[in-house]
Image 1: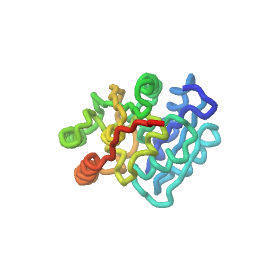
Image 2 (image 1 turned 90 degrees about the vertical axis):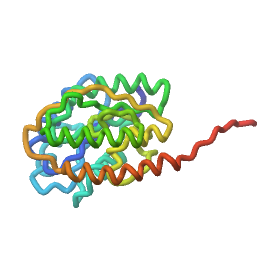
Image 3 (image 1 turned 120 degrees about the vertical axis):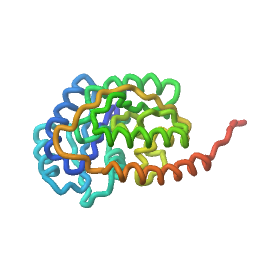
Image 4 (image 1 turned 60 degrees about the vertical axis):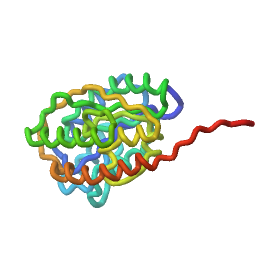
Length: 245
């Protein structure tokens, strides 16, 4: 994937994660030591704790770190879109800012993506948290949501909720943009003619703080949004084109 442009942008949406920021930035930097040119973009989604100040301080220590700030909480999808639009890298890696995703998995996912792109430039790789370090309630609601989504959308992806994903920047920007779109990326990519592969990744316990995007909200809002994605799937424009002259 070597080229004149920057190779990789790691986009991390955060809200009220002050205690987790420093460790995760260091882990990302260590994981990408052997990667070519890259940047780390943190998008602060209207935090009310010390997250923004902590990020300002970390910028002095990590020259590859960029920080974007939402004045008001706009949601995880909005934060991801802000970061990806601002990204300079041809390839995007995303992960959650709570430290449960392991940055050490990023190079492996990038290797898998490079293979997929040879056959289909619209491909993406999704992390699969086979062994989740979450509460029983969170795991139960996630299994339920994944089962319903998989049956209705047919995306053949066991864990769309994993924050660890890699994909071409242009692919993401070509997709329909709406709130909560990040929960349905595999189905949207497949609708766009792309390929999706799930790769098992490490999942770790949360060390500090609590989830800022509630489980109940994710479950029921996600089900409502699912019907919107089904509508999009049935309204796709496809045509076989042959250039004659």
